[in-house]
Image 1 (cartoon, helix red, strand yellow):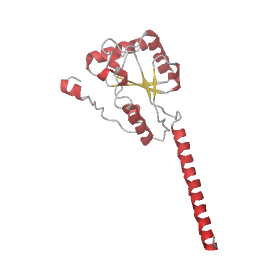
Image 2 (cartoon, one colour; image 1 turned 90 degrees about the vertical axis):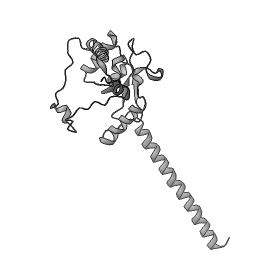
Image 3 (cartoon, rainbow, N blue to C red; image 1 turned 90 degrees about the horizontal axis):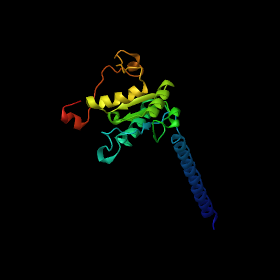
Image 4 (cartoon, rainbow, N blue to C red; image 1 turned 30 degrees about the vertical axis):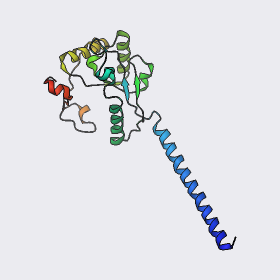
Length: 197
């Protein structure tokens, strides 16, 4: 092989090898980032899988009521926390029951359609301990007086000696990161058409 052709061949092979090393570095870097992002993170969305009362045996499409909007809501909420804060957010959410011991590993849990939940005495005691240790329970998506009554019935088992109170709009909790001066209720289409919120 003449010298100029050999030099070109060596340069060609060297450039292919360099490209391969560069591509492998990119793959390794993205794999490392993915494994870090899929670890538990500082925040992980945790959904509470509760037992339903006699009204909520099967929700829309035969799913349990605690599964409402799962997994989309969990994903979108976690992405919002990731986008709007500097908190490292886990890619995957968790589903735990009120009696799971792991619940104490998470500072924030979410319960949806709590107008259909029923916490038995043991579950209520466990949720009480979780809250007294500083855990935060976010409840969402319940309408009408009877759904409120079902929620209150379980919360009275959690805290039989404490009433549910409204937090005043000027409380600092509504002004930590953003000023939340207005509380807007966004009902579902079904509730809008019923005229009852």
